[in-house]
Image 1: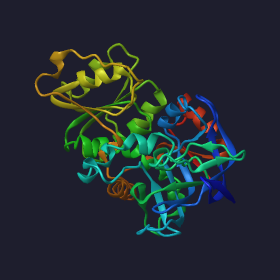
Image 2: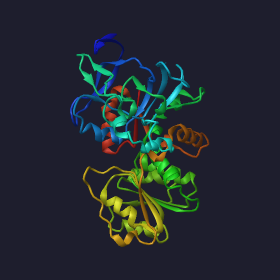
Image 3: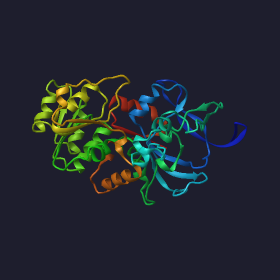
Image 4: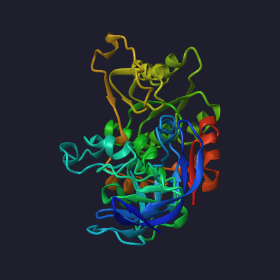
Length: 377
């Protein structure tokens, strides 16, 4: 398929994509067209894509039709001019985009890239162009987190692509997409951001995909006491199966006291994954002297966390965490290796759906009946 864009002919590929056409709207599967890769770009045929709560939050504020999805896994279909290190047939996981040119990227902190918002959240390339068109010719937002992988194909760049070994089994590849964001965020928050010590204690608020990934990382890091807090009894049971030493129902009036008792006077570390301001306050107030709270969950814009100033005394600290402070090309292979060694069973909390059932995957995620949904193409 060929279209004209700015008086130039542009080669397009037809594909199916889940399009959100209005704020809060359903994910509607439509026939659309995607540009072939430009210089520096890579076309990936998606095998599967994870469903993340960030997708669901962003769809509530979309201003124009957009393709979301940012936990893609697939196979390189073709590469644009100038791309090295990747070739058709390579198996890959897609992660967040970064510029590679700012001081944060040069310092090895791509999750803090100064261009993070425009590269990941605006629905366009860095130059403002759009690469997806609807059947009626209208432009559709893409490049969400540098991929927009709720579609059969995605355009990415080498900086947000993690190449996998050629012998990666196909059944494993279908499960690896969430490592590009949700799993990476939770596990990286524990391993990279907090750098937890073996033998330490940790409280984890929220037993969704991010929280359970943090739990697996805490177990792998040798934490001796791990308390998981949630309101879903089934998820608390799963947390115990995955290695939590204690679980606490957050609805109980004495939840905070239970956490402090279980950790022997307070936790060395805590992680808050829900974005709930009350949970964030508890994550700080259950810390032991010198403890550190990592805030991962993103609250509503304008929401505030109120703390008793005295709680921050005696060396307690609060840090914000994005994408687990990970360099995806380094960290995702580490997680895959841990999984292969039987030390990171993230596959225990994922559930696959046919791509045609993406709305059901979304609804199940919101209802709490699925921890981490993955749509399979």
